[in-house]
Amino acid sequence: MQQTSYTLAIIYGVSMALIGLNVQHDANHGAASRKVWINDLLGLGADFIGGCKWLWMEKHWTHHAYTNHKDQDPDGFAGEPLLLFNDYPPTSPKRAFYHSYQALYMVVVLDGYWLSSVFDFPQVWTLRDAGATKVGMKFDDNPWIASRTKYAVSLRILYHICNLIIPLYNNFSWTTVGHINVMGIAGSLTLGLLFTLSHNFENADRDPTVQARKTGEPVCWFKAQVETSSTYGGMIAGWLTGGLNFQVEHHLFPRMSSAWYPYIAPTVREICAKHGVRYVYYPWVWQNMWSTVQY
Image (tube, rainbow, N blue to C red; front, top):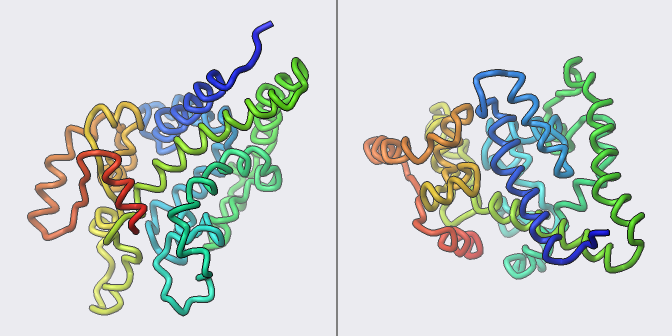
């Protein structure tokens, strides 16, 4: 019988993350294919890595609509109270002494991303993402979404059987438990770190509505998408991350296949420069990561 190992656990965890980055993300944006049924099918990749297609869409689409808005972007407050990504004033009750050290323990918190997802049965049962619900999005009122509950629950049970119950049944030991956790941590860090870089860096626009309130002019949605996002690397990084390294381009054109982002990026930069829009680009991922730590 094939035994589990820490090496296989890491490979499997990173592979799960790559499904999240390269398959389900494009698919659930309707960008993997021109055929709706193909996007729907590939979008279930979220469920096969311990997430939920419909919960992901609720939260992520809301994030795209209100990127970096401190009250309306679910990703902005998803890490609270342990991690603060929003730039709250020093007097904010959300700030605590330990947030001065969050750059040091951020990785530890992100380690738990997989665990928090696979055991989140209450949200799967209701198909109501807490973050999206908090900002007033009520996708559960849509009968199409509500009818998917039975599929979401069934896929979550299947995931538990394949990734938890069967390995423990074959070899019930702390070693197997350790392998399962390493798998989850590997997937969590691959996903969590790359997602965190995208909108949390030095001088990122933390609330696109502030300037609009000062001038009385409406928010320019396109300008806001650029100045709340960053891009790093090039085509190779795009192959590995499903184009999420081109976060600026992705937020401008979320329904475009990520395969096109390397080709449109130079033109996007030219247009941004022409109109005085701040386009943040890091040649290497570690530079973006360091800027995130600094922030």
